[in-house]
Length: 292
Image (cartoon, rainbow, N blue to C red; front, side, top):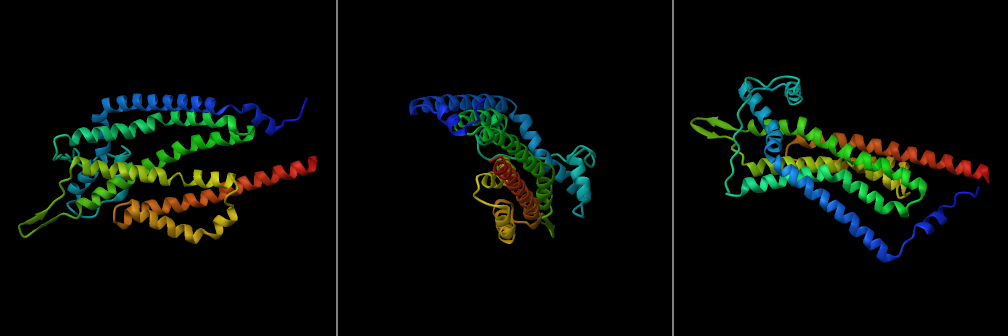
């Protein structure tokens, strides 16, 4: 049996430019069709999606009303979001308004678009893999698949942190800023688009920021960075994380810490992932040298 020749495998998989363009068109068409189908499905359920995303606001309003402006136990709030504890009373009614005739339609379309990206991502990722796989070595194909699985899982983890923890506390903080003194009042009356813009922006920001281990591990796999370099630059990375958290979150320290702390932990995870890749690469090189 002849030895495995990676260069021969690449040469055998080469195709003319026109074949690549036809293949690209086919993959893009499948991705677009998957997105359109997911968009139509999500738009049909835009109402339940809207109710689902408003629940953090409802939980915050219920605890704010029950506490009468005093301190709220954060554990109780999180347990209520996880459906492990009922909301105080029957749950506070949340009345979001819209001030433009088509505002609610655009909000539903935005929700459908966000849901379509999430639902269609497995199809898009698989089509991406099928397009680039012929240009990868056999061992690189096996290394590429875990990242396709890790990316959506980390995105969902970031989105879950926003939905179950961050959004309720942000809205509770916002409700706590109301003023009712000496016949003067200032109370929160949020519009549908304002709240949905906040919710979707936070979900996207956290979901993308939680891709840090995937990005750093890919860079380590490509040999662009090393675990030693990442460890030495830890202080600068923390400063960059705090700066990113200050930009993408509302201007309150709680929200910024909720993003900065997980990102710092994910950076440490990234260092260990790159270190593991380096150890496996070193072992493979030693085995190749001993075989030679």
